[in-house]
Amino acid sequence: MQVTAMRWWLARHDRIRDALPALVLIVVAVAATAAGKSGWHEPRATWVAWTALSCIPLVFRSRWPLPVVVLTLAVDLTGMALAPDHAFTPAASLVALYTFATRSSRRTAWTVGVIASVMITWVYAATHNEPLLVGTSLLRFDFAIAATGLGDAVRSRRLHLARAEARAENAERTREEEARRRVAEERVRIARELHDVVAHHITLVNAQAGVAHHLMRTDPDRAYEALAHIKDNSRAALDELRATVGLLRQSDDAPDSRAPIPRLADLDALVSGIRGGGLPVSVSRTGAPRPLAPSTELTAYRIIQEALTNTHKHALAAHAEVALDYGATVLRVTVTDDGEPHAPKGPGTGHGLIGMRERATAVGGTVTAGPRPEGGFRVVAELPLFLTPATT
Image (cartoon, rainbow, N blue to C red; front, side):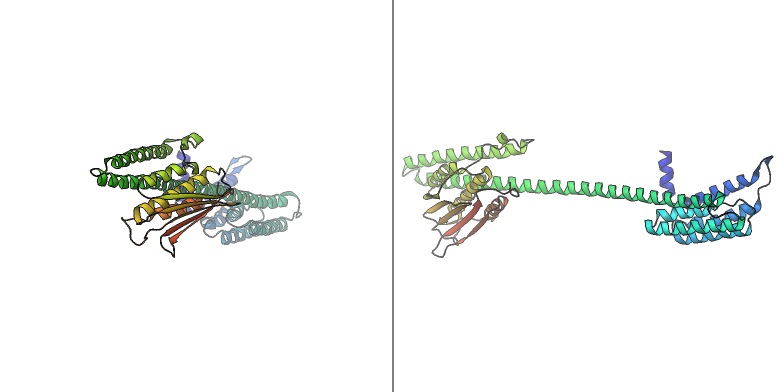
């Protein structure tokens, strides 16, 4: 904890952080020049002075790394030339080269590092009358190269960690966005299911209740029949609502968690309920009827259900027709009526048509709806018989 707190404090005080190596180098210079074979003695003022002078630019090494390299190198090389009797080590230049390598590109860092290494080696060899590539001259070359290499390694590690952190943040952000998207899609799906179930059955119950109320005194038998239809539709509504709410309680997506799912095999029961509400409906099938993917059958069923519900609720229709055309690759569903679209029986929200289009799009199909030239309204849905991987 103390180390972490110290790093955090130094990160907020750049000048102090940059000056720490300079203080260490000055202390080392004093200690090194005061130590001798016979014990401690007076520090060598010249060596300490040149070391302190070369360390001054290090206070700004993070802000201006390249100018600091130039200044420290100039002071160290001048010290080598003017005080050749001292075993001068360009320590400040090594710190500056390391800092520059951590804050520049690899190519630039190595270019500056090699040039500085050659200059240090050449000046030391020339002022001390030593061969260029042997002994202590070569050792100073190695020091400068090592400082540059260490700085480059630190820069690479920091870049790698930064990229890893960025990828982790992006992955986390992507997961959050994906979660929000899935929640939004699930809310729309549940809202669509509830709308289809409630709107259809409540419309039929309302119509049948009106029939029963109208015939209660004049034709009790037909009123009793209407009440029986109300009972059946209420039970069907409760069953479908229970199945829909059950989806919210499931922790997985097991097949039995989605049962019962309406299919085209249940179309006759759907049409029977519509007829019981007072709207004659005929059903025709062309092509070769065959079992389809559950999602396609559910989509076709819900589109037919919503179209007939809208006809019963909003149009003064005397008849409606449902046509299923099984093509080679497409199931074409057509629902028409002879009502008056511009004479609604009640207010509507428009969610029904939106839901039909959303359902068709989810399985890769399309829905078009609009008034017919000869009167009435038509809903046409084209659904693929074979789902592509993108829509499954």
